Length: 128
Image (tube, rainbow, N blue to C red):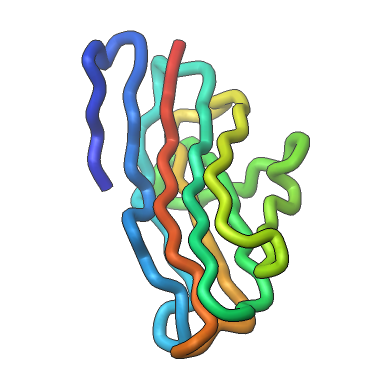
């Protein structure tokens, strides 16, 4: 995971998942928690590449007050942010609010194997 931005007081970009191939070996991934105070908004940027016909991949934005126990963000599309193989390759972004001290991103894929994969890069851009 990397942090970068021209002015960290106003905007910070966190690479949560960087080019991970979800297959028969890797079916889930979670980034480490990142302190999101003093930021109030986030933009989740997803780059989903599909090979073959994996079933689906579920993304969860999660928040924590102690960076130990994380809770799934359920507002709007985040309650079931799922991509299916039939949707094909996607580059999309979705915004939300930072309401706790720490944030992380998790992803769980189903129906993947050596030939049916998702390759994921996911970033959280934090802003005031």
